[in-house]
Length: 130
Image (cartoon, rainbow, N blue to C red; front, side, top):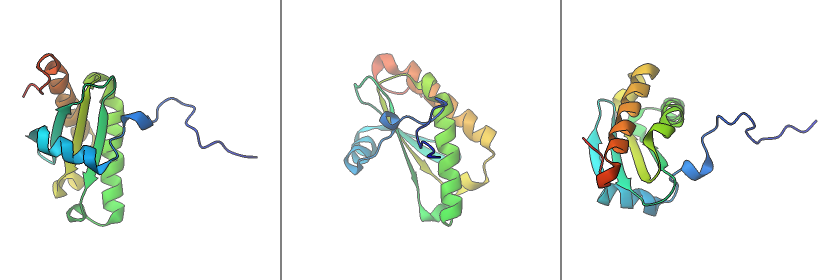
């Protein structure tokens, strides 16, 4: 039998919510607002689109490939769970710090949720409210 690679459960991280091009990352870094959380640095920029997009960067300073992928999976899951709170119109980039590998999932989820809410509250002025 052939197994479909498509996600039928509806719980996946949608492709249109990914920030993929390096030009988009550079635009968020240069024009966005920077917020330092305990274990990551978040950059937010209003994009004027009907969808918000998320980009993740985890450098080698965080650890080996297994550790980096673990941190990316955790960040991807927390953003997926809280993406609805963010609302449309944002480009967000998360840069993980080396301490991200030690953070409990619940703490990571709480920090990302609060950051998304601050962005959503700042939608009126197109800048995160922090």
